[in-house]
Amino acid sequence: MSSKEFDSTIKDYVVELCHRADFRDREWYWEEHVSEVVRLCEKFGPALGADMSILRPAALLHDLGKLLGMKDHAKAGAGEVERYLSEIAFPETTILTVAACIREHSFDPPDPESTESRILASCDGASHFTTLFWERYFFDVAKGLFSERDPSWRAAVESNAQKALEDWEKIVVSEIREYTQPHFECFKKRYALK
Ligand SMILES: [Fe+2]
Ligand SMILES: [Fe+2]
Image 1 (cartoon, rainbow, N blue to C red):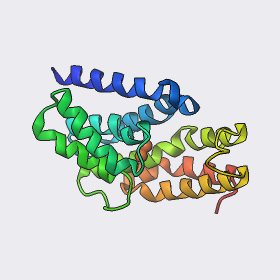
Image 2 (cartoon, rainbow, N blue to C red):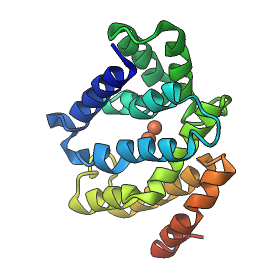
Image 3 (cartoon, rainbow, N blue to C red):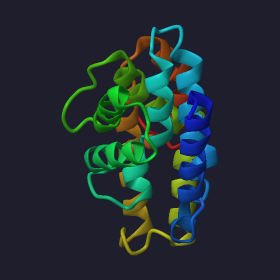
Image 4 (tube, rainbow, N blue to C red):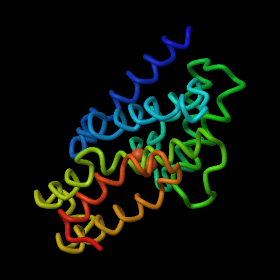
């Protein structure tokens, strides 16, 4: 397979997972999250010296664990990404590097180490402010979709607001932080966050 063919195979797989029947409460996940992480990685990656043959598949697959309903989605998802990339015969030498980016995109532990890992974690955090990501969650809370996980809508809104503030801390690359700052300020104003 050429790198273009790998790219479209991986993209089709992720889009299908986002739109599958039991992920309906988050059917926006491709349009308003994963595709935005890819867009931001493409916007910043080349100028920051990233190897796009690693960063692009990592961006597409970064939340695979979440899409498959795994707990500790970064760590578990990285293992699943290794398995999936081997299955489609992705170049062996880069599989572990792509998986490392995915393992490190959520900060518990370790901090992202490689350039590609740092950009992925930053673009993931930034995407939560450059799209309606958190608004989608707030809307789902309002629709009662989160009632099983969160006994009261107020607690759910507050916990989402807290997670949104943690997203800001994920943006470790200064160029991406600067780009996201106006979006973040608007977000804080909208929800009266300090
Ligand atoms: Fe994630
Ligand atoms: Fe994500």
